[in-house]
Image (cartoon, rainbow, N blue to C red; front, top):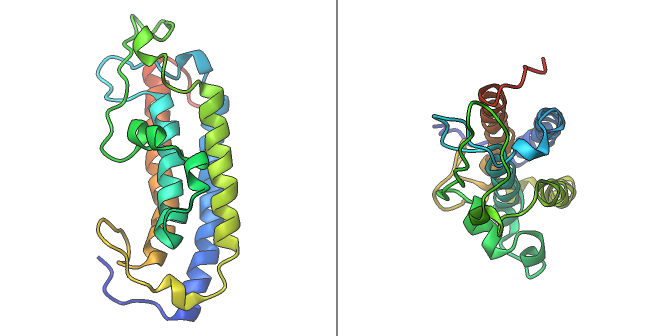
Length: 191
């Protein structure tokens, strides 16, 4: 845990650097997703605790949480961006839908996943959150605001900046999980 907090000027610089890392992480996520057939997104390989669809939904919810909610609280328009049912389905501590595959063959999602968003809806939500979050991060001009404390849980620093710095690290963790799921689904590596 970091105990030395940055100055307001350093916080702004770190925020700008993190924005570039967030873009890099998102581009890598999108590259992985472009090479993953959408009919496989809700398939859970044997031995895997998750599926690609849950990873995508979780990234949308977490980016909203780290870059928007942690920075300025919940706003009325956020319910359109991340509805409560979406947060419950994909937020921290949620249970991914388990749709087993047989010998790596794709299957249609069972009726239990009918209420879940389609892969196109997940991609749209991921894009909408990213666009809104990056606009808010780009608009930050007060380094002092980045030094405001946040409640647990937090990473890096116990301040708003910590949530921003953690965002690209968190996304890369889930890129690794998407990559592993792809391989378990029988897909080749993309790099």
